[in-house]
Length: 338
Figure (cartoon, rainbow, N blue to C red):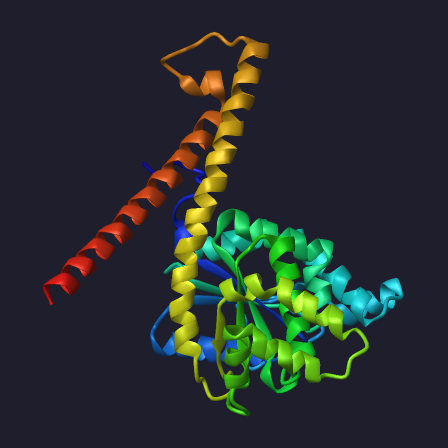
């Protein structure tokens, strides 16, 4: 039932988009290199996109590189911009080529299961710029997309810094409305047990905040209390981009998030279908077309076929959900027998 020009079929399910974001020096590029090496070892197809025009060199070889089409230094000289302004301008120019990127991903055989996107080190340039919003919304319209927010463990030993990271990841979640996974990087340098204790016991975290001599300590405590519900539902995964520890757990968790994204995305599609029907009904009343059963495309045009593409995707989602539900029931029966 796959029709020509379908936007909601195989590409949406074969590839998952992963945006790597975090403060400068948190290890985004190194983690992408580690993930790429492990995926090559397991013979998993993947795609790498570099969105940082100012990087001089990287450990991995990107399939799509913003530096191949946009000269960062030339933009600085031509438009008299500073480093950050040139990065924003480069992203604005690159975001206009999204459909070319989409076609390149879809044409790749076999289909890449993972698309790893490296963002600029200046986190606010991507998360709060128009180009970043365009790229996030465009990718999430066609592919399951998530954010992997990296936290430098060596710089998060203080509770105030930890609250700041949670607050930033929360703002990204509400701005983009995409799933966020927090990856605590550099666990090979020190243990992350204190972060687990803070997440499991708020009173312990509150006492740690009281020990900090901060002029707005009461504000930090109230802010941590309001964010308590958020970080309880946000997954925290410890990893080391250098040694590779915890990377396999991230790959397993990405598969779970992919299914959750599809379930939530289905609800949004159902809302869009309802709006689509209403728009079709209004157009039908205004134009009063004469029905022609021999050629429905004359009556409804391309909208008729776009509707079937959406319905086709919903049917595929329901089939996957039924399959997951069946596997769950079978596992429960096995447990009871044992």
